[in-house]
Length: 218
Image 1 (cartoon, rainbow, N blue to C red):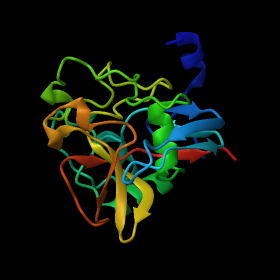
Image 2: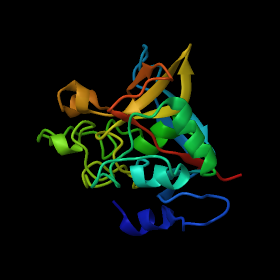
Image 3: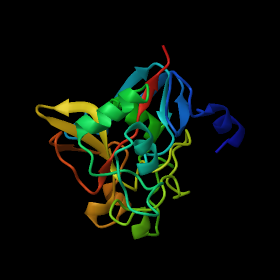
Image 4: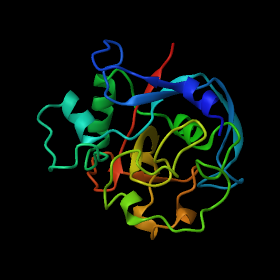
């Protein structure tokens, strides 16, 4: 990975910035085409090339500490401040992002941030790691957001294959589409490809489901 190129995309947003009030670092995803989907058949197909305008996305998942800054009544156990927040509904995640000056990502935005413009299978490339992921990097045994140095996309986005599943703005009927996540399929990266997705009712509060935000640049 070209560290100079990557560093130029990382934008650290200071607390108190009026337009974007969030505690997280953000990364700019550049304008251009990318490959979305895989194969020709649902649920992951059809594979196609899409063009997206540039946008900012949280480098890591929203944490308890981040969430509490927007909603002071939020409580969490000692030592979990930097763990990904979970057990939040789609509506709560949406409200947080909007209050922070952003929104939930579309499926296309999430997938481009995870796969890069070359359409990798996993955030880091096309190869499946031989070593099985440690339970610390699952959604059940929580660890600080962004601490898995292997699970990083070519744009520098963390935890898009492991950690928790994430709400998106997309829907299928009355269900919301979620992305990422690993824990509930036997801690095997075979079940955590960056183009895969699942559906969940928007009112669910699950221990393996969190979110991150995106921010438009126009």
